[in-house]
Each structure stands twice: as C-alpha cells, then as structure tokens.
Length: 216
Length: 216
DNA sequence: TAGATTGTTAATCGATTAACAATC
DNA sequence: TAGATTGTTAATCGATTAACAATC
Image (cartoon, rainbow over the protein chains, first blue to last red):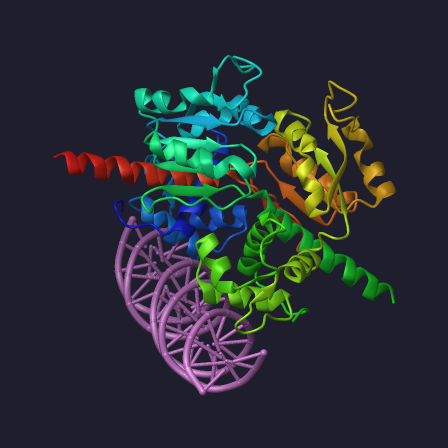
C-alpha cells in the first residue's frame, strides 16, 4: 500500500532490494518470496516483509511477490522514474569521478553541470560543462535545479551550501567532511567517509587485540 | 572513561566531533562545553555529553572539556594514531579518486597499492603501484594487509571479496552497490550511494508535491 | 555562594523481532 | 486439505531524550 509515511531506516533498505531484484536474470521465476530475498541479503524475513508492505500492494501467500511489479513499485516510490536535475560544485578528483559515473541515470539523477572556483577545464571527459562559481546562481534558477552536490574542501562547503540555497536548491548531497547549517526545509544528506572509516578502524583494532590475546 | 563497549551509532558521531574540534583555531579557548559543541553541530547536548563520556575521562563542570585532550582521546579511540594498511581493488575513476585523496592519512589509513583485472597504468598519478589481480593474494599476505577497499563493478564485488578474505583481510570497505556475503568475523562497511540518493530523491518528491499544493 | 555545566538515572520513543492469525 | 507464505499485533530491544543530582 502506498502513501504511508516511511521511516528513514526503511527508506535506506529499499535500494538494496531493488538492486537485488534487478540483478536477477530474466530466466528466474517471476515471483520471489520475502524469505528468499531476506536470505539473499542477509536480513530478517519479517523486516523484509514489513518493508515491502510499505511500498507494494502485497504479495500472495505461498507464492510471494511479483518481481516485476515489485521493481516498479520501489522505483516509483523512490522517484527514480522522473529525473532530478542536479549541479555539482567542486570539479576536483572526486567531483569528476561523480560526473563521470553513468550509473546515476538508474536513480533518476542527472548532473547537468559542474562549478568550480577556479576551473581548469571547460568540459569534463564526458562533455559536461564546467563553469565558474559566479554562474551558479543564475544557472540554478534558469534550470530550476533542486539538488546540489558538494565536493569542495570542508572549508568552503558552508559557503557553497549558502549559495546553492540562495539559488533555490532544496536538497544537498554533501561529500565535504563538515556539518552544514541549513534552514529546516532543506535536506542535507552527508556522504561521510570518515564515519565509515571510524567503524572500520575500530573493528580492526578489536581484531588485532583479539589476535594478540589468542597468541598468548 | 575508556574501554567500554561503544555502539555503532555513537561511533559514527565521533568523527564529527573530532573534525569540528580540529577545525577550531589555536586562538580559541582551550576548553569547550558540550553545550557549545552540540549547538555547533546541530545536536542535542545530552547526546554529546553521553558520547564524549564513552571516550574521554570527563569534562569539568562549569569549564567543559579540554579541547586538546578530547582530540587525543577520540583519535586514540578511533585508532587514528596507528596506521592501517589497505589495498584497493578496481582502479577505475572512483578507485583512482580514492587513491589520490591525501586526507585519509588523518584517519590513519594508508592505501599501499591498487589492483585491477586489466590495469591500464602501472602507477597512479601519485606514484602508487597498480598491479594485476593475480598479485593480490601474495601481496596481502606479504604486507599483512587487514583492509580491502572494493571499487569494482557490482558484478565482480563478491568474487573480489572472496579473494581478499582468502588473502587474510579482516575488514572490507565496499563501494560496489551490492550485498557481500562474508564470514561473521569479517566486517563489511558499505559506502552505498544508492542509499543516500534514495533519501534525497524521496525528500525532493515530497518538496515538489508540497509546492504544487501550495500553488493551488 | 550561585550558577553553569557535567554525568547519571529514569522515561520516552522508535525500530526490530517474535508470535500468531489469515490466506491461497 | 496441508503447508508455505503473507501480514498484523504484541513483545523486546536499543537508542534518544528528559529530569535531576553532583560538582567546581
């Protein structure tokens, strides 16, 4: 059943289901059970069922869910059917890597152009334009861009965020390792590698410690 | 007080405190209160205090925490003091961007080399070696590498993960948008952009919907 | 001392899991 | 029908927040 309020934790799991369903070969059976999905993704089956209940209009007992319509429902729910235009600020290595990643199309994301304080090129390898920061505001307004991707150094991220918001942007994908202060109606999604590294680092420390103790 | 079990949610917030503390100028006062930290990062002050209590040996009422020792304590806790060697698999755009990112040093991460199924270069721009996949196993063993970074396409990620684990790796930083099946003692940290995009996309959809309703 | 601030104990909230009834 | 599977209701778990006592 659609239209319900879906929590962020559920939301974050949906792309996982979608990717798995899409990765299945056409030769696979047209139906799949929550049990099968759960075991493939290493999750609890009740959780999978609850999650799917939020976006689909249900599976059938003994049969499971229709793969095709499940894919459709999740994509529909996530809004991958209608494209979102975005701008990217900071044409450094990470920025260019993101510009060049063609996979974003699958998520309905279209990066129109990059902006940089000191552009060294006028186009990316893929032929997308790189403009000077001074063009940002008018570009965003002209193209009614709603999403900005920040790949500048931490020290400039807040300033860039302010400019994006002034240009009418409603959501920011922030790759700069810093907190952004924004008005309540603006969403900031932090892609914080430091966070992941912390988890990894602490795990490895524990591993090393454990190993030493075993050796004793 | 150190040595307690710290939950993942706390762990993930620590890098935020650390980055903010490190970004403060030397001219700033030597002490900082949880209240100040909280408001700077847009968090609740009780949460900040509880988090800090897990890694530091406490602040002083009315004074706050010593900035320097707080930085030390968090870095110590996260293991940023002793470097972790890592290998990276998949020398594509994203892989090269990560190889070239010098900021990882701050997190005690040192990427020794890249591996690729069909390397087009023998070195990265920064002079780090790029080897053929066939060298992976012996390299990992020889250098006692504990961490692997996967930046290959989703279809090859599981296969690469298996090889890494065979080579003795204990933690995987997975940039491929797919679930990895690994033994229980191996940690997989997914850096899943699809997850972030889902959150952003759903937010924008809601925004657009809202706007339309206002216009009516 | 008074007040800002810390740290802890209790209450709330939300998300996950378990138990079970419904269904094909 | 019997059994696999769905979906829901209740129980558990963990994390966040609120209230308060301790402290400098």
